[in-house]
Amino acid sequence: MAKQVAISMGLLVAALAVPLKAQGGPSELTKFNFNIGGGIDTPLNPIGRYVGISGNFLLGAGYNIDRHNSIVGEFGWTGLPSNIGIQPVLAPDSNINLYTLTANYRHNIDRIGGSALGVYVIMGGGWYYRHFTVDQNFVVPPETVCLPIYSWYGYSCAGGIVNEQIFSKGASSGGVNGGVGLTVRLGNSGLKFYMESRYNYAFTNFIHTAYVPVTLGIRFN
Image 1 (tube, rainbow, N blue to C red):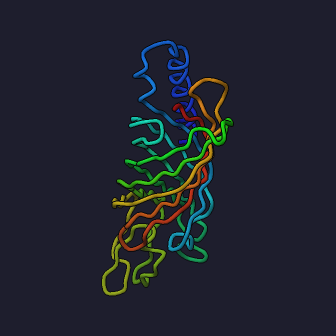
Image 2 (tube, rainbow, N blue to C red):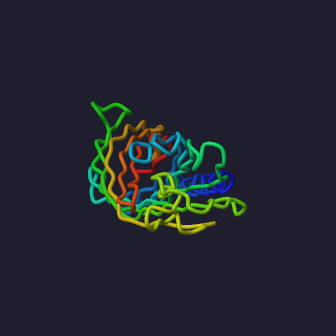
């Protein structure tokens, strides 16, 4: 996944060079915006009991309504590394990832007091998909009592007992987000360095998903 993220970031940075070369072109070009970035995520309860700090990747594109208001569609990836095992001794190797597709409204002030600094607020919502992959050699012992940690990994229960074995499972839900960002304009181009913190909450079954990513990246317009 890390290699794929790096390749994607490189390709989009190359694509962003095209608008820079076309600054003398049609004014309609400034109607479009792009952003790419990555950073760290801090999980919040309830998933904070099961997940440690991890990385994230964000890729977006959208339309500028005017100089202050924009609509942005974004794809995001967040790693959800476990910080606790299903059992104290016998714990499975697992890989848990969160994928998001969201539509967001952004209101920004491009320059504060004529400086290169800008600020914005962003909020929106969309689809949040949590995917679990558990070591195929791990077997839940018979008559295992169903604790909340089993629900986190995607196991189902019946009569208080874990009643299935899984290797891979997904959970989809709707979710919302909102946060603030700071931008620094790079020269006279439409490129800006940005730093953003955004609260995310998804209504995932059994254990809801809540986390705050801090993302650093490049934004065009």
